Image (cartoon, rainbow, N blue to C red; front, side, top):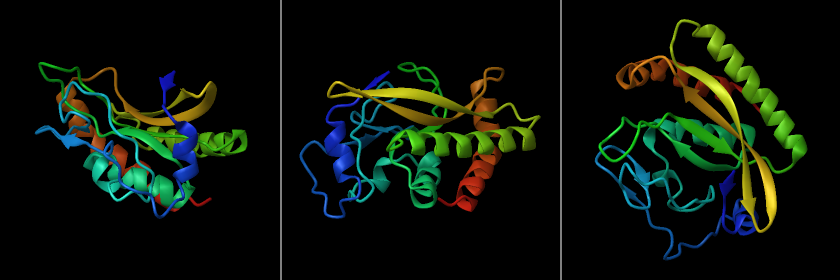
Length: 185
């Protein structure tokens, strides 16, 4: 379960092309590529921007930027969290790559789950010998006393060391990106 403050306001402004920048729209980038509130490997907090926010694209780490944008453009997804994956540091454990989406209702949840499941099965079959696999995760966002079911595309591996994970992830990611780009709502 993930806590999300002011979810209703976020959803109401997702399609707003004239969203304003506020003093809370601050993020930094670490030397290792972590984009978050503190700009450190240890920080897991970051502002969440709607798709028309002037900082939206810059706030997404490069390793998941294309997939995040493809999910929005091709499948009309609302994205709320992502990570390109990061090697461990003295301050933080390794993070694996993911993009999380928030379906608008149960019907969209089912539609996206089916699409994501097809993409995961196709990718994992195509890259059967690759240690990186695509897994669909579920999350519940809690906000204003309401729970919203969400989905996450994870790029995971339990059996390899960090350097192998990051060596092997790119072809899997590219294939998923291709599948999303070929999908339409």
